[in-house]
Amino acid sequence: MKAFAEKCSVGYYLIDPYEIHYLRFIVEAYPGIGVVSTVDPALGLVSISVAPGCESDMLEILDAERENLKLREVCPGSELFQMLSEKMGSGNIGGVSSGKN
Image (cartoon, rainbow, N blue to C red):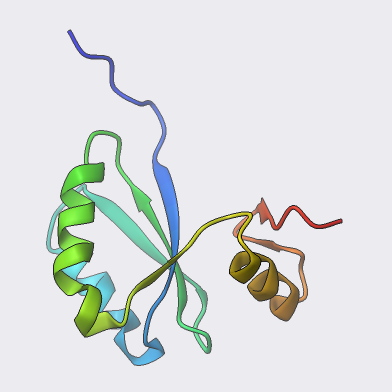
């Protein structure tokens, strides 16, 4: 029997700020798959918490809407993640440190 993850996985994405509501509606149309949280509405920075075992389904959804949403993943530790953290003035996004002291 395959063991399942016990925690949600979280991804950070930049999207067209005017499309945040659309992304939220899409994800909410699939009950229990995940939750979209707005980190910075002006930048279009969102976090998506994905329920354990639903990662591949969420990736399919995001891939299908990537062009419409102008979706771009932001990986923690990347230069872009660090730049966004500094722009927000906190040194971290959603409790994740940019790795820069």
